[in-house]
Image (tube, rainbow, N blue to C red):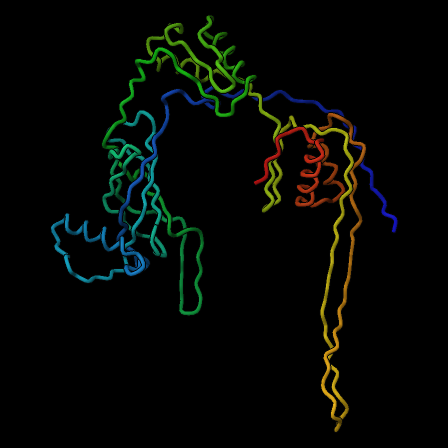
Length: 366
């Protein structure tokens, strides 16, 4: 059997457009300007029979007993089985420079066998940081992110009803002590380390201030001398330089998602001369046994005769050949789309091109 190779030649001119300028504040993290994670363990009440089963979640009964005893209700030795309460974990992020009295958002997630937190109210829950200190207290009505309905013979769930949020549901009670105004130098940490981008940030800051105040330490760090900027405080210095535009330089990268068939690629991705032949092979096997009965009034027995049907189909292959060196991957994908190649087959082709060493980019598979 002779197979024919479909040849696709790509020799289009490639023009690289300059990257759009991005503010420095969107490229870096400032030293000391960071949030802190908070977590707490609490109780949601007021559920319409969709709470935890006490037998399956004994910790719910324990925390409920503790709360009632703190309120002056003695429940020692009592047996109660309410279905409108649920034990939850409360998480939040304490933003940088948060002051006592400010409010932050919290996320509430069930940890027992509760079916829904819709309409529930979170009882006062302290939120602690990694050092064990309480920094915020949360309380409020939970806004669940889904809905659930159940009958005698069927049930339906939309979204995630066992998790929700409370906007501005926590109040900051303790501030994190950090003397930002006493810093003499501030390090700018790049979110995506790159020598070219770090050098451009250094040049942009020095050109704007007219003196050498910024210095690149490595691909991910640029240090700024606050005293040399002439600003009266580090906050004033950061306010002057964080909005400076810089053209970032990114690594060539291809990201694919095999579950959804999504392909995302950068403009700097290049592909060398390569040839690819791709086809689909379908194999079908069907069993249809036949039962043969003996003649009437005979002493024979029924016999099962196997019957198997095998069908092998091979679709015409799709070939890619003589791709000129330096061709962009977007042009290759445009050519494959013109041939009707599906996204999932295209992902397999890209993986093969990467394995052959012809795809010059970081290949990320989700």
